[in-house]
Amino acid sequence: MQTRRVRDFMARHYATVKPGQTLAAAVRVLLEYHQSAVPVVDEQHQMVGLLSEADCMRTTLVEGYFNEGVTLVKDLMTAEPDTVSPDLELSAVSERFLQNKRRMMPVVEAGTLVGIVQRHDILKALI
Image (cartoon, rainbow, N blue to C red; front, top):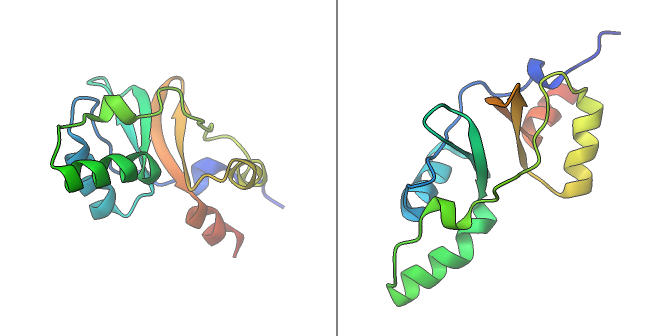
């Protein structure tokens, strides 16, 4: 039986945001691309963080309700998120999803973001 790896099922086309973007712009990206989180990348496409739906919810609610301030992605992102290698076996990444209660993980190779893997990608692979 052939070993299934993240690289065989990861999404190669996905949305990213920049650290200096507004939270409102990042939320629009999350919604448009149906991602539960979005990698934050610099100008060289190096991953510098991760912004999840959960990161956005409270601040968006407060800003919307009180009509206060403009929050930037860099203010809310997780600076050192969990990542996976494209060579990781699907069974191992499945365990990480279950243990960490994540919905999406960035796929990083040699420091560069090369894809994302979401729980539904794993489910597709398993059936």
